[in-house]
Length: 62
Image (tube, rainbow, N blue to C red; front, side, top):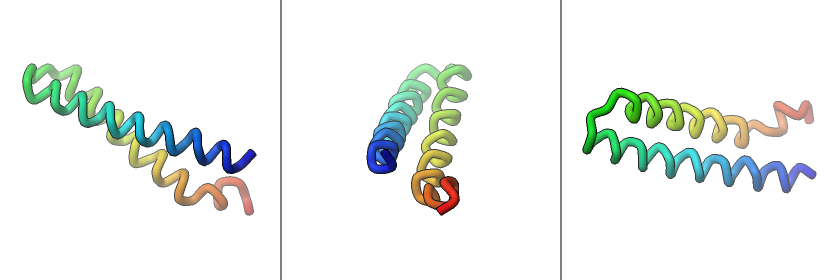
């Protein structure tokens, strides 16, 4: 079960990182506040998920 969880979290990290790049690129063209907030939010999610994956054993109590 843990390897599958690692796979799902890794997939989420890749998705969030890709969406961060896309939103940042979109913000550069439109200068919309909404896309900037979206980019920053997904950037924070990428960092948080990466931290979680790196310290998964601590979160699981092992």
